[in-house]
Length: 63
Image 1 (cartoon, rainbow, N blue to C red):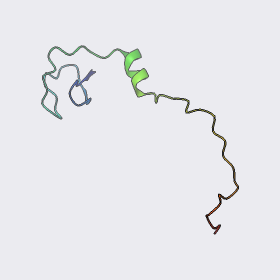
Image 2 (image 1 turned 60 degrees about the vertical axis):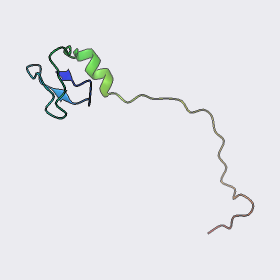
Image 3 (image 1 turned 180 degrees about the vertical axis):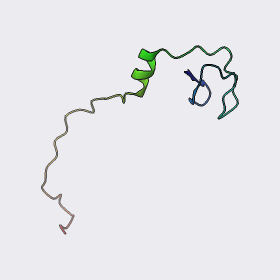
Image 4 (image 1 turned 90 degrees about the vertical axis):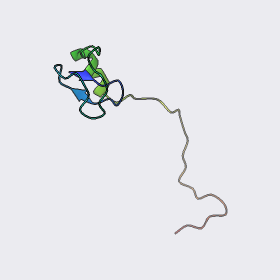
């Protein structure tokens, strides 16, 4: 598979131009299996430790 550097669409290796945006794919390298598996996995980031309480804040009524 090839990935269009312009729009990110996946194309068959024999395609010379992106069927989505028309970009030239003649010099785009083929995706390796390892690379395409990593790209499809979502990145997990740690936001941090947040304390959340169930107590209502002052000035707001509970429903």
